[in-house]
Amino acid sequence: MAEIILNEQNFDSEVLKSDLPVMIDFWAVWCGPCKVLSPIVEEIAKEYEGKLKVGKVNVDENNALAAKYGVMSIPTLKFFKKGKLVGEMIGAAPKTSVEAEVKKHI
Image 1 (cartoon, rainbow, N blue to C red):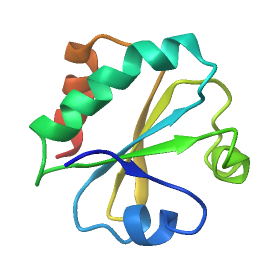
Image 2 (image 1 turned 180 degrees about the vertical axis):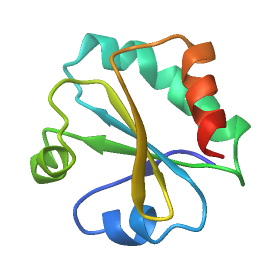
Image 3 (image 1 turned 90 degrees about the vertical axis):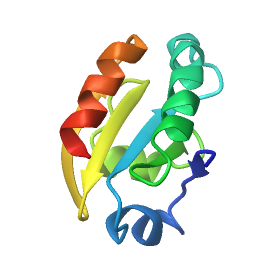
């Protein structure tokens, strides 16, 4: 499954009410490190299909969501389980690091 584009309208239904754990990539078009992390996020979305939901929040288009969840720098990955924030990673990271964090939450 490809990543889900998240916004203020669908965040509650896709993230907070999800039966699956959710990893959210907070990013922006102009962000260099976000471009480094993006293919890793895509791979995780495909490899963990059925075990993990993966979403993306463009912080320029959804700054209220970014503010609500305390995103101060991007890229930031946030992990939700049963509607609760359970983890985060800030900055670009290698796939092994992202995968290690994913495995804590699935």
